[in-house]
Length: 337
Image 1: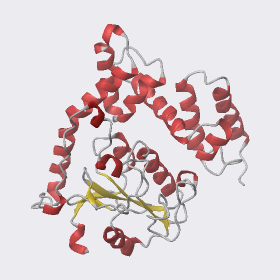
Image 2: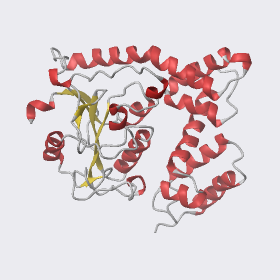
Image 3: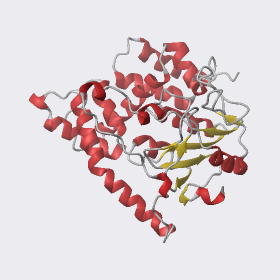
Protein backbone atom coordinates (compact mmCIF):
# COMPACT_ATOMS: atom_id res chain seq x y z
CA UNK A 1 0.00 0.00 0.00
CA UNK A 2 1.37 3.40 -1.04
CA UNK A 3 2.15 5.64 1.94
CA UNK A 4 0.96 9.24 2.21
CA UNK A 5 3.48 12.04 2.13
CA UNK A 6 3.79 14.35 5.14
CA UNK A 7 1.83 17.04 3.31
CA UNK A 8 -0.87 14.57 2.30
CA UNK A 9 -1.13 13.25 5.87
CA UNK A 10 -1.53 16.79 7.16
CA UNK A 11 -4.17 17.50 4.54
CA UNK A 12 -6.09 14.34 5.45
CA UNK A 13 -6.11 15.35 9.14
CA UNK A 14 -7.31 18.82 8.19
CA UNK A 15 -10.14 17.62 5.97
CA UNK A 16 -11.23 14.96 8.45
CA UNK A 17 -11.23 17.49 11.28
CA UNK A 18 -13.72 19.55 9.29
CA UNK A 19 -16.03 16.55 9.01
CA UNK A 20 -15.51 15.38 12.59
CA UNK A 21 -16.33 18.76 14.16
CA UNK A 22 -19.95 17.82 13.84
CA UNK A 23 -20.59 18.39 10.18
CA UNK A 24 -20.35 22.10 10.82
CA UNK A 25 -21.75 23.05 7.44
CA UNK A 26 -22.68 21.00 4.41
CA UNK A 27 -20.48 23.20 2.23
CA UNK A 28 -17.34 22.53 4.27
CA UNK A 29 -18.11 18.83 4.53
CA UNK A 30 -18.82 18.47 0.82
CA UNK A 31 -15.66 20.40 -0.03
CA UNK A 32 -13.56 18.26 2.30
CA UNK A 33 -14.96 15.06 0.80
CA UNK A 34 -14.24 16.38 -2.69
CA UNK A 35 -10.64 17.14 -1.77
CA UNK A 36 -10.14 13.70 -0.22
CA UNK A 37 -11.62 11.97 -3.26
CA UNK A 38 -9.72 13.97 -5.88
CA UNK A 39 -6.35 13.50 -4.17
CA UNK A 40 -7.18 9.89 -3.18
CA UNK A 41 -6.15 10.61 0.40
CA UNK A 42 -8.16 7.59 1.53
CA UNK A 43 -5.80 5.16 -0.22
CA UNK A 44 -3.74 4.19 2.83
CA UNK A 45 -6.60 2.36 4.56
CA UNK A 46 -9.29 2.01 1.90
CA UNK A 47 -9.36 0.69 -1.64
CA UNK A 48 -12.02 3.06 -2.94
CA UNK A 49 -13.56 6.38 -2.00
CA UNK A 50 -16.90 4.62 -1.49
CA UNK A 51 -15.34 2.24 1.05
CA UNK A 52 -13.77 5.22 2.82
CA UNK A 53 -17.08 7.07 3.14
CA UNK A 54 -18.84 4.02 4.52
CA UNK A 55 -16.05 2.77 6.76
CA UNK A 56 -14.78 6.09 8.14
CA UNK A 57 -17.99 8.11 8.34
CA UNK A 58 -20.87 5.70 7.90
CA UNK A 59 -21.94 7.66 4.83
CA UNK A 60 -23.69 5.93 1.98
CA UNK A 61 -22.21 6.76 -1.38
CA UNK A 62 -25.38 8.56 -2.44
CA UNK A 63 -25.23 10.83 0.61
CA UNK A 64 -21.55 11.61 0.11
CA UNK A 65 -22.20 12.64 -3.47
CA UNK A 66 -25.18 14.76 -2.41
CA UNK A 67 -22.88 16.71 -0.09
CA UNK A 68 -20.17 17.08 -2.73
CA UNK A 69 -22.66 18.15 -5.39
CA UNK A 70 -24.15 20.69 -2.98
CA UNK A 71 -20.71 22.10 -2.19
CA UNK A 72 -19.92 22.50 -5.89
CA UNK A 73 -23.29 24.15 -6.52
CA UNK A 74 -22.77 26.67 -3.71
CA UNK A 75 -19.32 27.44 -5.09
CA UNK A 76 -20.97 28.15 -8.44
CA UNK A 77 -23.53 30.43 -6.79
CA UNK A 78 -20.81 32.32 -4.92
CA UNK A 79 -19.05 33.12 -8.18
CA UNK A 80 -22.23 34.45 -9.78
CA UNK A 81 -22.90 38.16 -10.06
CA UNK A 82 -26.69 37.76 -9.92
CA UNK A 83 -27.02 35.79 -6.68
CA UNK A 84 -27.81 37.98 -3.68
CA UNK A 85 -28.63 35.32 -1.06
CA UNK A 86 -26.89 31.98 -0.66
CA UNK A 87 -28.68 28.77 0.41
CA UNK A 88 -28.66 28.02 4.12
CA UNK A 89 -29.29 24.27 3.94
CA UNK A 90 -28.21 21.37 1.76
CA UNK A 91 -31.86 20.51 1.03
CA UNK A 92 -32.27 23.92 -0.64
CA UNK A 93 -29.29 23.25 -2.88
CA UNK A 94 -30.05 19.65 -3.80
CA UNK A 95 -32.59 20.44 -6.56
CA UNK A 96 -30.08 22.79 -8.22
CA UNK A 97 -27.67 19.91 -8.79
CA UNK A 98 -30.10 18.58 -11.40
CA UNK A 99 -29.15 21.54 -13.61
CA UNK A 100 -25.99 22.41 -15.45
CA UNK A 101 -23.66 24.70 -13.43
CA UNK A 102 -24.25 27.61 -15.82
CA UNK A 103 -28.01 27.39 -15.14
CA UNK A 104 -27.90 27.01 -11.36
CA UNK A 105 -27.49 30.68 -10.45
CA UNK A 106 -30.44 31.83 -12.57
CA UNK A 107 -32.70 29.10 -11.19
CA UNK A 108 -31.69 29.85 -7.58
CA UNK A 109 -32.23 33.57 -7.97
CA UNK A 110 -35.63 32.90 -9.49
CA UNK A 111 -36.50 30.70 -6.51
CA UNK A 112 -35.45 33.47 -4.11
CA UNK A 113 -37.44 36.13 -5.93
CA UNK A 114 -40.62 34.02 -6.21
CA UNK A 115 -40.53 32.33 -2.79
CA UNK A 116 -43.94 32.47 -1.04
CA UNK A 117 -43.78 34.86 1.91
CA UNK A 118 -40.06 35.21 1.28
CA UNK A 119 -39.36 31.69 2.57
CA UNK A 120 -37.20 29.63 0.21
CA UNK A 121 -38.13 26.02 0.86
CA UNK A 122 -36.58 22.97 -0.77
CA UNK A 123 -39.96 22.17 -2.32
CA UNK A 124 -40.15 25.62 -3.91
CA UNK A 125 -36.64 25.33 -5.31
CA UNK A 126 -37.54 21.93 -6.77
CA UNK A 127 -40.64 23.45 -8.38
CA UNK A 128 -38.57 26.19 -9.98
CA UNK A 129 -35.99 23.67 -11.19
CA UNK A 130 -38.74 21.48 -12.68
CA UNK A 131 -40.21 24.48 -14.49
CA UNK A 132 -36.77 25.52 -15.68
CA UNK A 133 -36.03 22.05 -17.03
CA UNK A 134 -39.41 21.89 -18.77
CA UNK A 135 -38.90 25.28 -20.42
CA UNK A 136 -35.48 24.32 -21.76
CA UNK A 137 -36.33 20.72 -22.68
CA UNK A 138 -37.29 21.50 -26.29
CA UNK A 139 -34.25 23.73 -26.71
CA UNK A 140 -31.94 20.87 -25.71
CA UNK A 141 -33.46 18.47 -28.23
CA UNK A 142 -33.69 21.02 -31.03
CA UNK A 143 -30.03 21.93 -30.57
CA UNK A 144 -29.07 18.26 -30.42
CA UNK A 145 -31.04 17.45 -33.55
CA UNK A 146 -29.46 20.30 -35.48
CA UNK A 147 -25.93 19.31 -34.54
CA UNK A 148 -26.48 15.66 -35.34
CA UNK A 149 -28.23 16.44 -38.59
CA UNK A 150 -25.00 17.99 -39.85
CA UNK A 151 -23.31 14.59 -39.47
CA UNK A 152 -26.24 12.38 -40.41
CA UNK A 153 -28.02 14.32 -43.15
CA UNK A 154 -31.05 12.46 -44.39
CA UNK A 155 -31.30 10.16 -41.38
CA UNK A 156 -34.80 8.70 -40.94
CA UNK A 157 -36.19 9.94 -37.66
CA UNK A 158 -39.34 7.82 -37.85
CA UNK A 159 -39.69 5.08 -35.30
CA UNK A 160 -40.22 1.51 -36.38
CA UNK A 161 -43.89 0.59 -36.39
CA UNK A 162 -43.39 -2.04 -33.72
CA UNK A 163 -41.64 0.48 -31.47
CA UNK A 164 -44.70 2.65 -30.86
CA UNK A 165 -45.27 3.43 -27.20
CA UNK A 166 -48.17 1.64 -25.50
CA UNK A 167 -50.97 3.93 -24.40
CA UNK A 168 -51.59 3.90 -20.68
CA UNK A 169 -55.26 4.05 -19.56
CA UNK A 170 -56.28 7.13 -17.62
CA UNK A 171 -56.62 6.75 -13.87
CA UNK A 172 -60.30 6.92 -12.96
CA UNK A 173 -60.26 6.80 -9.18
CA UNK A 174 -58.02 7.65 -6.21
CA UNK A 175 -57.57 3.94 -5.58
CA UNK A 176 -56.51 3.34 -9.15
CA UNK A 177 -54.10 6.22 -8.96
CA UNK A 178 -52.18 4.48 -6.19
CA UNK A 179 -51.64 1.33 -8.24
CA UNK A 180 -48.44 1.21 -10.29
CA UNK A 181 -48.90 0.67 -14.00
CA UNK A 182 -47.18 -2.19 -15.76
CA UNK A 183 -44.70 0.31 -17.18
CA UNK A 184 -43.93 1.69 -13.72
CA UNK A 185 -43.16 -1.80 -12.45
CA UNK A 186 -41.24 -2.76 -15.57
CA UNK A 187 -38.92 0.20 -15.35
CA UNK A 188 -38.68 0.54 -11.60
CA UNK A 189 -35.13 1.18 -10.44
CA UNK A 190 -35.78 -1.33 -7.66
CA UNK A 191 -36.47 -4.11 -10.16
CA UNK A 192 -33.35 -5.88 -11.41
CA UNK A 193 -35.22 -8.44 -13.54
CA UNK A 194 -35.56 -6.45 -16.77
CA UNK A 195 -32.69 -6.94 -19.12
CA UNK A 196 -31.07 -5.81 -22.34
CA UNK A 197 -32.29 -7.41 -25.57
CA UNK A 198 -29.90 -10.25 -26.28
CA UNK A 199 -29.48 -9.19 -29.90
CA UNK A 200 -28.28 -5.72 -28.87
CA UNK A 201 -25.88 -7.12 -26.31
CA UNK A 202 -24.50 -9.72 -28.73
CA UNK A 203 -23.81 -7.00 -31.29
CA UNK A 204 -21.87 -4.93 -28.77
CA UNK A 205 -20.16 -7.97 -27.24
CA UNK A 206 -18.85 -8.89 -30.68
CA UNK A 207 -17.35 -5.42 -30.93
CA UNK A 208 -15.90 -5.03 -27.43
CA UNK A 209 -15.60 -8.53 -25.90
CA UNK A 210 -17.05 -7.88 -22.46
CA UNK A 211 -15.47 -9.52 -19.42
CA UNK A 212 -17.79 -8.22 -16.68
CA UNK A 213 -21.45 -7.24 -16.22
CA UNK A 214 -21.23 -4.71 -13.40
CA UNK A 215 -24.93 -4.40 -12.64
CA UNK A 216 -26.95 -7.59 -12.98
CA UNK A 217 -28.76 -10.44 -11.28
CA UNK A 218 -28.42 -14.19 -11.70
CA UNK A 219 -31.28 -14.32 -14.20
CA UNK A 220 -30.28 -11.29 -16.26
CA UNK A 221 -26.46 -11.29 -16.25
CA UNK A 222 -24.94 -10.93 -19.69
CA UNK A 223 -21.43 -12.06 -18.76
CA UNK A 224 -20.08 -15.08 -16.92
CA UNK A 225 -18.63 -12.69 -14.36
CA UNK A 226 -21.09 -10.21 -12.92
CA UNK A 227 -21.92 -8.18 -9.83
CA UNK A 228 -25.32 -8.83 -8.30
CA UNK A 229 -27.19 -6.44 -5.99
CA UNK A 230 -25.68 -8.35 -3.07
CA UNK A 231 -22.18 -7.81 -4.47
CA UNK A 232 -22.91 -4.10 -4.93
CA UNK A 233 -20.95 -3.16 -8.04
CA UNK A 234 -20.61 0.38 -6.74
CA UNK A 235 -18.00 -0.72 -4.21
CA UNK A 236 -16.20 -3.17 -6.49
CA UNK A 237 -13.15 -2.71 -8.70
CA UNK A 238 -13.82 -2.75 -12.46
CA UNK A 239 -10.51 -1.28 -13.53
CA UNK A 240 -9.11 -4.39 -15.21
CA UNK A 241 -12.23 -5.21 -17.21
CA UNK A 242 -14.17 -4.41 -20.34
CA UNK A 243 -17.52 -3.78 -18.72
CA UNK A 244 -21.14 -3.93 -19.75
CA UNK A 245 -23.50 -1.75 -17.71
CA UNK A 246 -27.28 -1.52 -17.89
CA UNK A 247 -27.81 0.45 -14.66
CA UNK A 248 -30.99 1.08 -12.63
CA UNK A 249 -32.85 3.92 -14.34
CA UNK A 250 -34.05 5.71 -11.22
CA UNK A 251 -32.23 8.12 -8.95
CA UNK A 252 -29.21 5.81 -8.82
CA UNK A 253 -28.24 6.22 -12.47
CA UNK A 254 -26.14 9.31 -11.73
CA UNK A 255 -24.11 7.38 -9.15
CA UNK A 256 -23.54 4.45 -11.52
CA UNK A 257 -22.39 6.77 -14.32
CA UNK A 258 -19.96 8.50 -11.97
CA UNK A 259 -18.62 5.13 -10.89
CA UNK A 260 -18.14 4.20 -14.55
CA UNK A 261 -16.08 7.33 -15.22
CA UNK A 262 -14.01 6.78 -12.08
CA UNK A 263 -13.20 3.22 -13.18
CA UNK A 264 -12.30 4.44 -16.67
CA UNK A 265 -9.66 6.65 -15.08
CA UNK A 266 -8.23 3.51 -13.47
CA UNK A 267 -8.14 1.60 -16.75
CA UNK A 268 -11.60 0.16 -17.41
CA UNK A 269 -13.64 0.37 -20.58
CA UNK A 270 -17.35 0.70 -19.80
CA UNK A 271 -20.18 0.43 -22.33
CA UNK A 272 -23.47 1.72 -20.93
CA UNK A 273 -27.10 1.42 -22.04
CA UNK A 274 -28.90 4.46 -20.67
CA UNK A 275 -31.92 6.70 -21.33
CA UNK A 276 -31.06 9.50 -23.75
CA UNK A 277 -31.77 12.16 -21.13
CA UNK A 278 -29.90 15.11 -22.53
CA UNK A 279 -31.95 17.38 -20.27
CA UNK A 280 -30.28 16.10 -17.10
CA UNK A 281 -27.11 17.02 -15.30
CA UNK A 282 -25.81 13.45 -15.05
CA UNK A 283 -25.90 13.13 -18.86
CA UNK A 284 -23.68 16.14 -19.42
CA UNK A 285 -21.40 15.26 -16.52
CA UNK A 286 -20.89 11.61 -17.39
CA UNK A 287 -21.71 10.88 -21.03
CA UNK A 288 -20.37 13.56 -23.34
CA UNK A 289 -16.76 12.59 -22.64
CA UNK A 290 -17.32 9.32 -24.52
CA UNK A 291 -18.81 8.01 -27.75
CA UNK A 292 -22.60 8.43 -27.72
CA UNK A 293 -24.70 6.25 -30.01
CA UNK A 294 -28.34 7.30 -30.11
CA UNK A 295 -30.40 4.21 -30.88
CA UNK A 296 -33.05 4.41 -33.56
CA UNK A 297 -36.50 3.56 -32.26
CA UNK A 298 -37.29 2.30 -28.78
CA UNK A 299 -35.41 -0.51 -27.09
CA UNK A 300 -37.62 -3.39 -26.03
CA UNK A 301 -36.44 -4.60 -22.64
CA UNK A 302 -36.99 -8.18 -21.55
CA UNK A 303 -38.70 -9.28 -18.37
CA UNK A 304 -38.98 -12.98 -17.43
CA UNK A 305 -42.58 -14.11 -17.70
CA UNK A 306 -43.74 -10.89 -19.35
CA UNK A 307 -44.11 -9.65 -22.89
CA UNK A 308 -41.23 -7.46 -24.06
CA UNK A 309 -42.17 -3.79 -23.85
CA UNK A 310 -40.79 -0.74 -25.59
CA UNK A 311 -39.09 1.72 -23.28
CA UNK A 312 -41.04 4.96 -22.71
CA UNK A 313 -37.96 6.96 -23.68
CA UNK A 314 -35.24 7.02 -26.35
CA UNK A 315 -32.05 5.16 -25.44
CA UNK A 316 -28.35 5.55 -26.10
CA UNK A 317 -25.24 3.43 -25.84
CA UNK A 318 -22.40 5.37 -24.23
CA UNK A 319 -18.85 4.06 -24.66
CA UNK A 320 -16.39 5.27 -22.03
CA UNK A 321 -12.70 4.46 -22.01
CA UNK A 322 -9.22 5.83 -22.47
CA UNK A 323 -8.59 6.39 -26.14
CA UNK A 324 -12.32 6.44 -26.96
CA UNK A 325 -13.10 9.42 -29.19
CA UNK A 326 -15.79 11.75 -27.88
CA UNK A 327 -18.39 11.90 -30.63
CA UNK A 328 -22.12 11.53 -31.23
CA UNK A 329 -23.77 9.36 -33.90
CA UNK A 330 -27.12 7.89 -34.79
CA UNK A 331 -27.08 4.09 -34.72
CA UNK A 332 -29.63 1.98 -36.56
CA UNK A 333 -28.40 -1.10 -34.73
CA UNK A 334 -31.18 -3.41 -35.93
CA UNK A 335 -29.72 -3.33 -39.43
CA UNK A 336 -26.68 -5.16 -38.07
CA UNK A 337 -28.55 -7.88 -36.18
